[in-house]
Length: 396
Image (cartoon, rainbow, N blue to C red; front, side, top):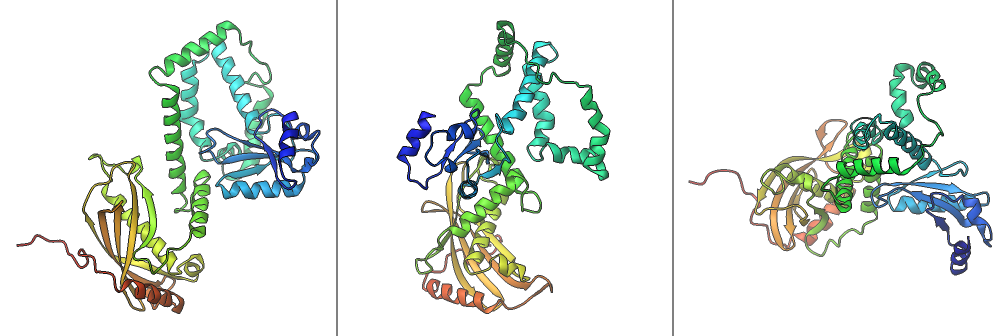
């Protein structure tokens, strides 16, 4: 409590004060503060740099503006705030984890399962379910077409038996501690804590990225959060100066999933990167969400990729884009994928403006043609890349 008083003394009167505590209630921390309405609990989960959730817990004197401001700040960083209705010891996530942890300790103590077996049961079954759907949504599926009411009617009475130890806590005596520690050592033989952290982080990144591709690219769960955050960053990014040469619209790092059996970036990832660069180019000339919703877009009708080098895992790449020519329906662009100053690959593309509802090519709207005209004016003095107009074939 004394620490909170010291923090407040060093803060401006309009600053928020948040604690990441897992145990203290916010109302207790508010005692002695001159402005208790600005204090709240903001409880994240490790690793904080990957897991997006933060539990926001108001105290008795926390004002609504504090919660609203904190929620907005966390969303700006890509996190997902969940505001609890009222304060409670250990909040929500830790209470659920404690119940599972307590039951797992009993299973080890009673010789039902080992540490490794319990971990396997979690990670090979409901742990995977929980990574993409919560407890109640998962059980709703189990209820079938009749939904949650049917599930509760069918399985709810079993809670009266019950199967678990509830609040009965096993005695953590030397025997149980030794058993758990020895089994854990055997399970993780050869893996340091740093090794486990790296494996955990890489797995979490892979799961979130996989979720970001679901629902036709809109994403699901943590993946949808990632997509929304990325889109916000792109909208907030400064557009490059059209008079400064090729447009640098995309930066990318080669991730392990992009590597093939030859140890370098696999073929289809080049098309993926160039496709993203085209999307950025279209956004740059004004093809935004509103334009797409109006039923107009550009389709790629031809692509020619040339590979000039190799990209390895961890390489920092960027794409430079040049507008070669355009008319009312067609746009001719050239992308250069580069690592520093070295060109790794290039893609020449022809884009066709379409009315997606009518399913036919039509002239782009005047605002798009005007943006293309301005860009072409700044690019027309640039030299034509030597790869433009190349075709595939064996020269005689």
